[in-house]
Amino acid sequence: MHIRHGDFTAFCGKGDPCFTVAQFAFQLELLKKELAAYGRPVPLNVLVMSDESDPKFFEQVKARGWKMSQDGEGVQNPKLVEELGGW
Image 1 (cartoon, rainbow, N blue to C red):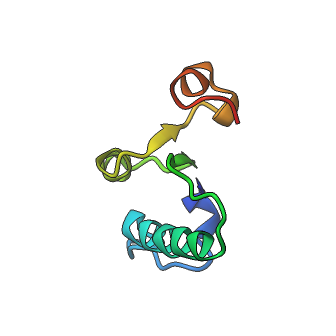
Image 2 (image 1 turned 90 degrees about the vertical axis):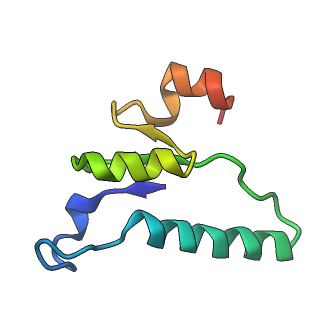
């Protein structure tokens, strides 16, 4: 998932929770159910790329077992490729 909170400022009030990790998790579960219903492969790993700077956000991502990339390398990050396999 590419979660760029900086892009959402036009849609959300300042200080309001906007597109929370829980909301992304809910939508991801809906997507998994839909993929399974159509016999499609269901993703087992979640890689989050974000411009977020709030440490609480990263704690929530980590708590869900999702992987995080902030270095700009994204899926080319050698550590992530080693851990999750090639994309």
